[in-house]
Structure formats: C-alpha cells, structure tokens
Length: 406
Ligand SMILES: NC(=O)c1ccc[n+]([C@@H]2O[C@H](COP(=O)([O-])OP(=O)(O)OC[C@H]3O[C@@H](n4cnc5c(N)ncnc54)[C@H](O)[C@@H]3O)[C@@H](O)[C@H]2O)c1
Image 1 (cartoon, rainbow, N blue to C red):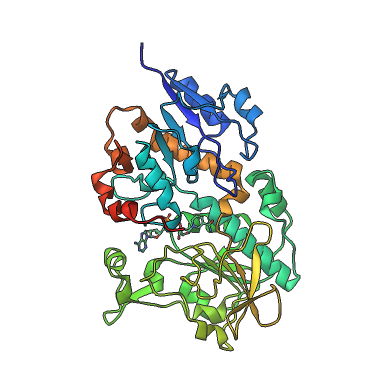
Image 2 (image 1 turned 120 degrees about the vertical axis):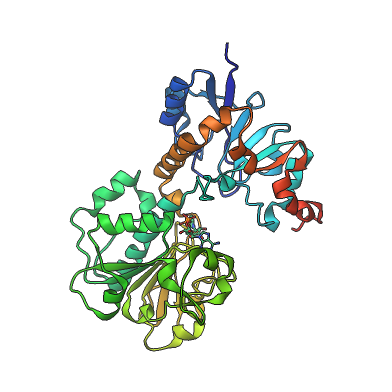
C-alpha cells in the first residue's frame, strides 16, 4: 500500500491574524478524492475566512495537534513559539532579504531542525514566480482607488470590498454604476496589473494607448497601461531591454512625468526596488501641473516608487491625504491633497477568492512535487534543511548569526 501523506493547514498566529488559507475546503475535498494517499487536517481557527464547519463538511478533520502531519501549510510567518520541531513547513517566511523582524523566527527554525520551503521562492523553470496574491491585490487596489475618487468628487459611491462576501458579490454591485469621464494611468505588467485590468474590464473603462492618452480628452472613462518598456529608458541610448533593466535599473530614466498632468488616478502596480527611479519627485508634487487626485499605490513601498507614500493605511481606513506643498500626511479629500490608498494587505479584503486562486496555483504547479521523494523545484525554494541553511541560501548565514534585532 502507498504511504499516507498527512498535510496540516495551520492556524495563522501572526498578529494581526491573516484570514487566508493555502487550500479552500473544496480544494481539500478534491485533493483527497484524487489522491487517496493524502489526508488533510485543519487546525481550528476563528480567523480563517472559511469556517471550521466548512472544512469539516468537506471531509477535512479538525485537529488542534498537528504534530503527526508530514507537511504543514500556512500563509504568513509562524511565530517561533508555535513552531513544531522537525517538521516541513511551507509559508511566506519573508527572510530571503534578511528582513530584521523575521531573524528571530529563522534562528528558531534552524534550532528546531525544521525544513522551511518558502512559497515566494517557488519558480517555474524560466524564473517566474509560481505563487502570489498579486491578482486580487490589483482587483481590490483598483476598486479602492475608484472608491476614493468617488468620495473625493462626490460623483458616485462604491462599497468597500471587505463588506462583500466574495468577488462575485462585488461584481454584482457594479451593475448600474456609471463612472464620469476620468483618466486612469495604471503601471506594471505582472499579477497586480492583471487584477487592475480586470476591474477596468468589469466597469467598462476603455483602454487607450499611452501616446493617445497623453494628448486626447474623452467624455467617458478611460485608462492606459504603462509597462516597464514604456516607463523606463536607458540614459543616453534611449533604449529598453528587460534583462538590462533588471540588472542595471539605476542606468535608466523614468518617463512617467507627463502623466501627472493628464491623469486623475494613478494605479501603481510595478515591481520596485531602491535602485529603480521613482515615478516622480516630491518637487513635482508641488507644481501646478500635478493633477493626479488619487493614487492607489498597490506596489506600496513607503517613500518608494511613489514618493508621497508616507506609510501604510488600513483596510478599515484605506485612504489618507498628502498635502502637495509640504508632503505631509493629512485627512483625505481636502483641497490641495493628493489622496493615497496604501493598504499593504489588499488580498485580505477578498480572502475567499484570494485563497482559491492561491490554492489553484499550488495545486496545479507544486502539489505533485510535494509527493516526490526528490524535487528540484522544492529544493530551490528550501531555505533550511537538517538544521542548516541550504547552499542556495547560505548567504543568509550572517543574518542568522547576528544579534537578534528588536
Ligand atoms: N498592497 C498589497 O497588498 C500587495 C499585494 C501583492 C503584491 N504587492 C506588490 O505589488 C508589486 C507587484 O506585484 P506583482 O504580484 O504584480 O508582481 P509580479 O511578480 O507578478 O510582476 C512584477 C513585474 O515586475 C517585473 N520584474 C520582476 N523582477 C524585476 C526586477 N528585478 N526589476 C524590474 N522588474 C522586475 C516582472 O517581469 C513583472 O512584469 C510588488 O511590489 C508587490 O510587493 C502588493
């Protein structure tokens, strides 16, 4: 008989509690039906978007003690006191960039001889990430940006996403919504951008190519999309090559500035790092021709690609104002403010859909690997094993050895 594989869905313990899950109840049911050697257990949780009863109904056993499981699946970091020694865990550890707040957790993981596989490091052979929540971040971010613009102008009203049961209900609220003429500039070309475009489609906002968007006026709502090739040009040569840009972003100029004059809303979904030039400067914000009213900064780096991102906002209170002259935080929707939507956990507003999307990708591209004795894909995403960092992640040794940063 084939060996049984017990998988545990752990309760999210990081505060604030995350409400997403690696697999939905229906996905668990499907897996156990198609892979009879797999048994899935869930640790009861009052915070998960799927109720314990939904898992129980799908045939998932609810179990407080998961120490018999072979694989433990979570979403966010696991606080050290909840780690079970000698287990294999999969979650977003946020340790690969030596994030100070997770140093202590990684030390505990090594001490407890835990095998840590990080979702973020699971990639297709061409290097593209397999798992992410960007699509629903884009969906929610675009909605929130439009909701804020409706607030600011008083022209229309949209309901907060987190008050909807799921994406289907959100879509049902779009029926009959008529947006005024407005111009939206969306940046990026990844999962976040795909989510933004989904909302553009659902609300019937028309795509206009960038060069036409810059010079024309429209009496209906429109958007344009700027991918990296339209946003950045190499200094001097005035060319763009993806590989070169990824390797030497500091050699590139950003060409976003003309859009600050002709756009009402910016929906920012680019990948950003400190050596990539920002979309505009604090000085540009002060100028009379800075006409953007609302920025949905889905990328969301404080003082990052959008220099008036002055820190995160929350799902409950998603928008703050920034005084354009002083670049300081104010109440939103004042005269002279640009209004900022900087929520860092947007997918948590649609946790049921975000979990389903995540579980689908996990199922399609990773699950079979989990059943193998040896998987290159998993090995590449394994940060710790046998009480040590793996060769690929040995660059984290000084982070692991250093004093705990509090
Ligand atoms: N606010 C939120 O809740 C939230 C949620 C998810 C993601 N995000 C953020 O949104 C941003 C975009 O996420 P995404 O899921 O669309 O990412 P993605 O990985 O799907 O796409 C990113 C895009 O950037 C490009 N890229 C990748 N590496 C690059 C590099 N080194 N230099 C330049 N470009 C590079 C890729 O080719 C791709 O087109 C990220 O900064 C992410 O952290 C925010």
